[in-house]
Amino acid sequence: MAVTKIKPIKSTIAKSLAYICNPDKTEESIFVSSYGCTPELAALEFEFLLKNARQGGKVLGHHLMQAFKPDEISPEDAHELGTQLADEILGGKYAYVIATHVDKNHIHNHIIFCAVNMENHHRFICNKATCWQIRSASDRHCAEHGLSVIFPKGRGKNYKVYIDLQAEENQNKGKGFEQWAKINNLKLAASTLVYLQQHGLDSQVKIETRYNELLAEMATNTKELKFVENDMKSLKETQGYLRTVQQTKEVYKQFQSAKNQDKLYIQHESEIRVYEHAKKSLAGVKLTSKDIKAILPELEARKSHLYMVRQKMKDEHKILTDAKLALLNEKPKKITKQLER
Image (cartoon, rainbow, N blue to C red; front, side, top):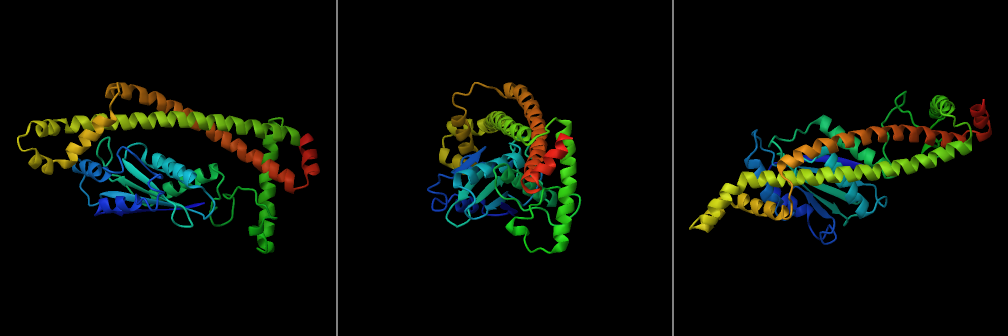
């Protein structure tokens, strides 16, 4: 389970970055990483992006927090989940720094990203819909990693999960809840039964076999998705560095040829340091912006296909999980007879 919160940063972004990157809170910066910038230069790199913003605004960056239930997750997994959340919400367009704090009994992530993106210098739009998108993505990632998730409040047809009446959290909730839960489970069992019959899964053994096969298929799909997404992330970062070099090279040339370099450095510190970092990051890179523009659509199409396959797998996984729970809790012999009809 993770709780998420996001707030704007309207001043002292350097102080905010210094706070989240505190070595005492991040195991000597082991759990600090970034995208499209470096933690040490992020404030200057954000400043450069903000100078080129196409819209006005007081917001310099956004601070996204993701806090986990105590003793439910390791620092390594928390950092990975935070990175996945940032990559999904920001889409490889915004530079960010992520730091996982481990100095409290509840591990939590801090993600600070620039308010202006690296592609076209438009500002990030943060509203209620964004907050729900962040929460939804965080909950989905937690569920996929086996962590607990808070279900939506209320009852009704949108609940659609098998409710274990033997579970401790469902004890002593009254006869009304028990009756509603039983009806919910019966409706779910009916739709599950139809699916199992249509796919020839007419025994507990066949259900278990298909369930294990599906887990292996999902693992392969996840591995391939990560490979594609990492490729896209790397290419977009390289694309950003190439764009930065183009935008700052004239200032850097002036700096190199200036008689009074100290004066020019004070005037254009962010451009000069951002240029130097971008050039260093591009060392050994042979791809051009044109190459990357040609490759990215192919990867995006592959990613979309893999996500479509993944969704179908998740739907089947839910059905098989419901079937396994039903067989475990609702008189297996009776259900097996129904399947065999």
